[in-house]
Length: 236
Image (tube, rainbow, N blue to C red; front, top):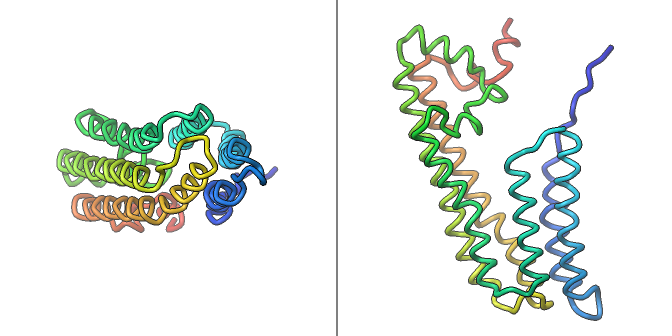
């Protein structure tokens, strides 16, 4: 009997469904002679929302960041449908990554910094082997300090995202919510947020991983490839 495995999502397909298609709908179909502002907004929100539900059904568990994405979509839809002041969109765009940044910062002062959940996790790293090497070398305390620093660096990526989200939203979205112009600006905001926010945040995340890899090499005597999940099994 063969075990069933979950096929990993194609990043290009995910990007198309959650970012490109909704943006094009908002920018091209919001005029009254097309779908209209309300219908275009609802259709645009349906694509990433359906993708999130699909992921939940496939994984059979709730992903924190996917859940926050759905909440963000619902808030965006609410602002547009209720025709609230566009300032609330900027606040919303900044609030979610900002709150995540505060949560990550606070976790640095607990026994379980959130970098353990995102990077130093058994799903990604051979944590058992790393911990064994740290014990042999007597470097547990030093490594915990490094994890705390990595957590602060991770929090910085969320705070950067919050500031950039607020700046972009106030700069791009200036038309009254619920209008076709608002939808078009929201579409441009969605498209620009990826290269101007997501990519720099990924670079910061990469810097955190680089710092963590250096710490593992120095304190546990393992290269990143040796510390990754599955490497030890392949060697044996």
